[in-house]
Length: 182
Image (cartoon, rainbow, N blue to C red; front, side, top):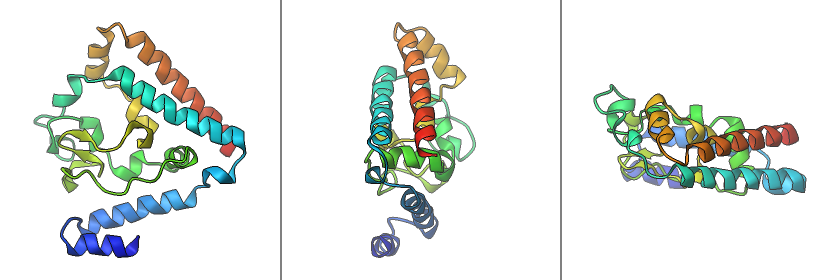
């Protein structure tokens, strides 16, 4: 990992700050137990969390609110027109409990920042076209968060009740996983 990071710094693809941020994120992943280190029920719950993330993301689908919410805002939120909430710092959203859920589901840690990202834009996986991570690799808080504008848009759709139910189911699955893994 260190050699790869040094190469990316020398090549100009990453700054030292981005590399340090990635290093801290990897350290969080390394500090968590792997799926083989836990009982099968805990692994199954983590895999369920990953499936629920995908299902929730699919249920929300393409939305208008997220494409323009940050337009005109100051950095980090306003670096891109959309995803004001994605202007949150990487290590804030990838809290240890979120990292644990991802790792226990057998999902590899993210390996590169968004290719079209900007260091001033908050989370390193946020790019001009949104999040560069598949839903299963994202922190759950990124998937369950619904700002006022997004809520208003989703409430107007027939899928709002399903989205609400999936958010609650994901929260419940995360709580069960936390209870099993401490």
